[in-house]
Image 1 (cartoon, helix red, strand yellow):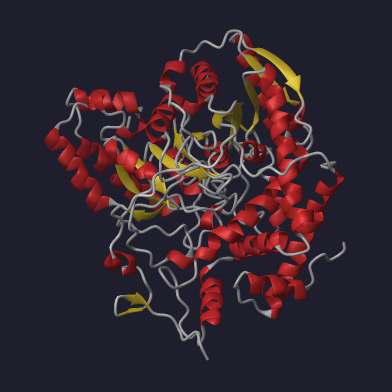
Image 2: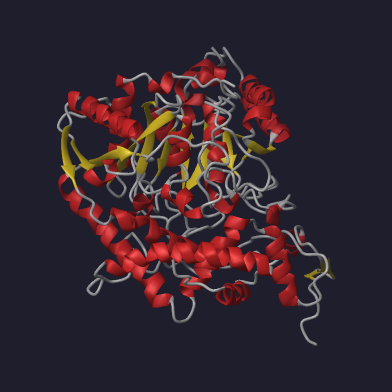
Length: 491
Length: 97
């Protein structure tokens, strides 16, 4: 068994007992990456020198691992999270020369304070726009369960790296499903916290009213521990919530007796693959066996979520991405002879197809004469989608359903049609619009392609504890999370 | 399917968004954006006459803090990633004719 198969608790025990050193653990990640990343293509930048130096220091200082929740723990970081002095590209050509970010995102500062070790930066869809990581300007990450399949997106590098055992943990970001959908496709655990739970300072903004950073891990317990470290109010992000961060691990009792679970009928209807639906129903049966009380409910405005999301997220993106002007940092076109041309050429050369499409869609939705019909209308429907959740949560503790209507699809299969690609996110997007927390955990494999299926568990605002409680109880009853992919696939 | 966004519209929007696009791209984006906008027309069937537009999911009002100067980055650091600079400033093409 590899060191990298162990949980945080197990690794820290080994560190405490001096069975292993932080340096050995850190080196094990880089060895594994060297061995497998030619096939997986998860990493864009490695932080090898600094990581090994930090590991050496931790070994020398010999700080008591019990004092720090993530002492010596290796973690990969999605490349839209700012890391001081470590290249941060958002998988965009525009930031191909952004070698010297000037500050750390708050989540990075918190990981450093907890003595975690940043192993490197992970591939993604450019500026987090996509559902397959195929929109990266640099490389196509493959799914460790089968190299012909996408890892999902936009945090595809994060999910693939964890699934392939390159790093035991990673951070991603989730605007419309970008942590949960790749977690589902790669058979790992991925959490989108409540909007406001985690500071967005230093997360390169895509859609500011929806974005959240979240952990990807192999177990629920590890996930809860990392979220505990990165959560909390931050004066650098006025939308971060001034609410106490509980010890999420205290919820991991295995006891869900009497817990009220809602299953929205819309989440198992047409469009959801039959076997995916069957696996979700089996998971629901497991929850019932554990003593949960399960009822069918309705989230009637779910079907409007995709249209609402693409109007709002694209509008916010068109404003957020205006900062990429080719003047202060990033790409600058060579031969522009005036300022406007400089903006236009730099942006056109630097941005990929999907990013341009969304900037234009957002600019259109916000433009004079269309604002009320598209942007404002979407804000109103967002309110109705949120009220759907509020009504259900008056009577229930959690909502469960699939994370994605299907398993991973093949590389190149959906890239030509934006609307088909957007449909992958129908079950994850409503959660971002309502700002509630949700996790994806493995709940089986599809018999057609042996690819993983994800169970989504959604909670009330700031009630990540109950989400983790149910996820953990289910995980302890099943063996899905112990399955290991054949890196690079069967072919 | 009706085309909601003509190639002219695409060029107008691209200009607003400071993107240079070719005629060929305008054609492609016209089709793709039209199909996304057509898809989004479904929102018009929802009665929102009594619904307030939602800008933020949490019940938060303005968040204030003291306006105190703090050390942040230096001028040298600010220029570190600049594609072009001169005399401690960002350099751009001439703005005036």
